[in-house]
Amino acid sequence: MSQEKLEQLDCIISGLPFFNFSQTVRDHLLNEIFASLKDGGMFIAFQYSRQMKKQLALRFDIEEIKFVPLNVPPSFVYVCRKRGIR
Image 1: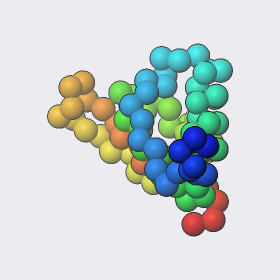
Image 2: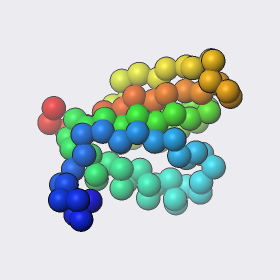
Image 3: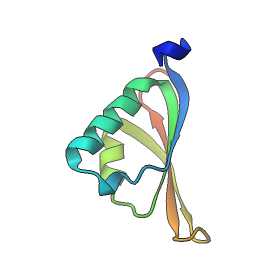
Image 4: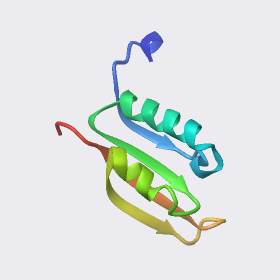
């Protein structure tokens, strides 16, 4: 982000298949996402299961999980907020 002269981001939207990665890779990605967001920043991720709920809840306040049945395959959209000053 330093090349773009951005300090931290307001929002990150992800379609990464987190549960397909090893736990080490998941931890690294989520730590980088968390560090890249401003306090109160949003992380929005679509996933094909609810298996990431516990891991996301360790770092973020999960404001909503939306089920999207018309997506092929059906998916879940996690709407998360970074804990901190809002």
